[in-house]
Structures are given as C-alpha cells and as structure tokens.
Length: 85
Image (cartoon, rainbow, N blue to C red):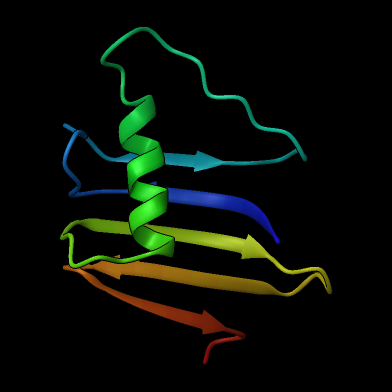
C-alpha cells in the first residue's frame, strides 16, 4: 500500500490543520525543530495502531490493485472504508 493523502486536524502537537498529498513513491519530510515532524509520525502511528488516543486523522492509501482504502481516526476510534463500504 502507498500513502496518498494525509489530513491531520485536532491532534496533539498540531496547532493548525495539516493536509498532505503524496504524488510520488518517495516522500521526505524536512523541517526545523518543533515544526511537527514527530507529531506527524505519532498521528500516523495512532491511526494505524490506535491506543485510545484522541484526535482526528484521515488517510487515503492506494492498494496494490489500484483501489483506495480510507482510514479515519476520530476520538480514539478508527474506521476503515474500501470502495465506499
């Protein structure tokens, strides 16, 4: 799977909404200290392995067959959708 879109709203470490769109196969995140790089990693980790943490994170992944898989973390609960289901 490839991460294609990431949206981070209400999440510790973010003071504003962050939306990233990944166009290529390799994505590098660069920035000065305290710019949110580690918070971005924490948000992805919480989305994939929820442990009761709150916040709001959404991601779109491209599957190997070209289909899309969507994940949404809202208040500690993650919901996955594929093809609208």
